[in-house]
Length: 395
Image 1 (cartoon, rainbow, N blue to C red):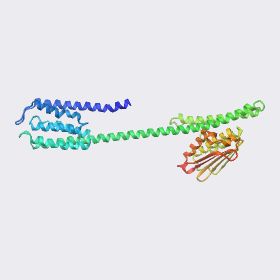
Image 2 (image 1 turned 45 degrees about the vertical axis):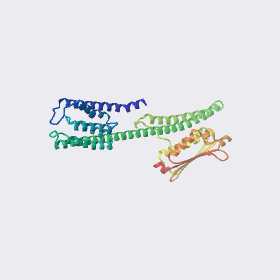
Image 3 (image 1 turned 90 degrees about the horizontal axis):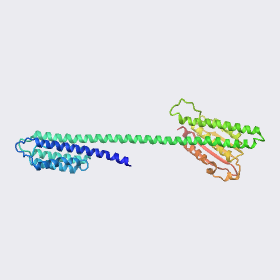
Image 4 (image 1 turned 135 degrees about the horizontal axis):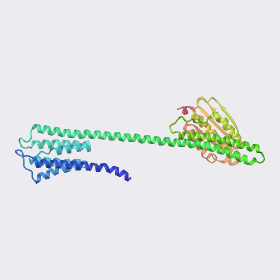
């Protein structure tokens, strides 16, 4: 807040300095004219009242930004009194500068009132001059200079407002761009978080199960223990490959020359089923239809849904699971069911049973405006069903 207050106060201070400098210059010029003026026939010599009027015609300039009508009334009133007293020299420069400044720094309604009043006072001031001091050309040149001062101030004010509007629009566009960048960063972080969750949760579940099997049979069944260790090695390597792919996307910073592993899809489900089967869960896989219309994001989403559902079945379900992926003309149907392992599994809610996994699946499906249902089956087991529209995915 202090920095903002300082930035707001800086233009006001600069404006006051400029107004003070102009006021001082006008006063110095007027006093110099009074000191060096040669009286013409019919003009009166300067006196104390002359200098008082001079101050009244100059000092109100400092108020023209905040009180334009008051400042103009004082200046024009002093100018009219000065002219009626037949003092010399003619102080039109003060009225011209005041008119220009009010047109530049104030609203059009105020500047028009001051412009009309200035023309009227200048006309009277020239008309009341002694004979031989002012002529018709003097009156025309005076009105012309007043019109130029008013129009110039008005034009500069329009240009300044236009530039301010352009700068404000540029700031707005820049802010919108920054907001879009921030939203893109947040969305990308959420996507990467989902990817890391799917990869790590699946790999660690398989590793934990296989490690438990190996620890249990290492003395009595060394061959089975070796198979468990081999499954742990295979799963770990696969998880590291996917994590390197994700980290490579984060690190390349626009360098597309670095080779990245392709994202997994439905064609990689047999390998996933093999890993889960080696971990102790019997899995059957059925894929029907032609995935020709499925895009890479839909393919990846279908794979991640199956992966998360099988991982949860490995931890909570069993002893068998069934995976069905069916491609239709307009959608992809994914179903994963398990036979259940105990009564607590039947009573568990989706949030309790799958934790963040169900949230991640729901977020993935919602991207394509699809449907996801997950919950216990009658009797025992758990069922996850997802439908991903192909038309929404293509758009």
